[in-house]
Length: 217
Ligand SMILES: *Cc1c(COP(=O)(O)O)cnc(C)c1O
Image (cartoon, rainbow, N blue to C red; front, side):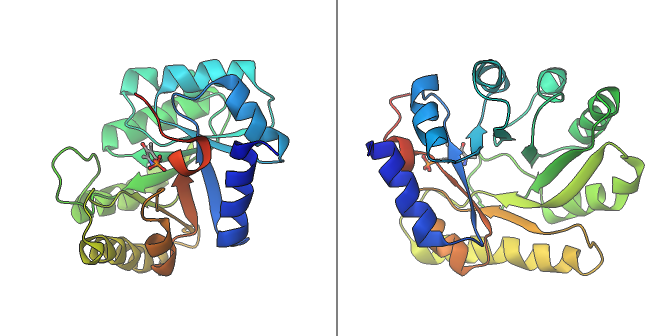
């Protein structure tokens, strides 16, 4: 078996059926994605709309495409016809545009709100009040279904810092879930921290390098 296929199977066995593995294929070629696809895997994540759309066009149509990167409002129209789950809803303006494009395409687009759990300045995401603002306005967006939260922990070695950040996301998730029956997805955990994420309640992990190997860009 090919190494991508081995890596993917090993991770899926390790995390079990209750955690969905999104194979993050950004920068990786169509042929490498096909290797993973051949194992029966159908969930792939990309962080650039143009790249994802060209891969969508070139690959089988039963793939579930996950948008995990920051989205520019003027590009929503390109992914609206086919995207399976947006992990990176990070502004009211973006929610409005996704809603508009979803309705145009006769779809309801499933989204996670990106919650900023790290103190690192470069990370996108909303603070707790901003997350709640979108939650409280969601009934105005018939084209959107908000089903959970996504977060990225700080890029540090200190496991205690990462653990605290994941707990912060889980706490807000549990709070929102009390009055939102649709809330079910906790997208947290990447190659270096997915074990800790799952310990803290994650049920969706986004794994790139551990499946496809290091990225050179
Ligand atoms: C690239 C990326 C990942 C995957 O990162 P790895 O460390 O390679 O597993 C996960 N989430 C987001 C938002 C990413 O941009």
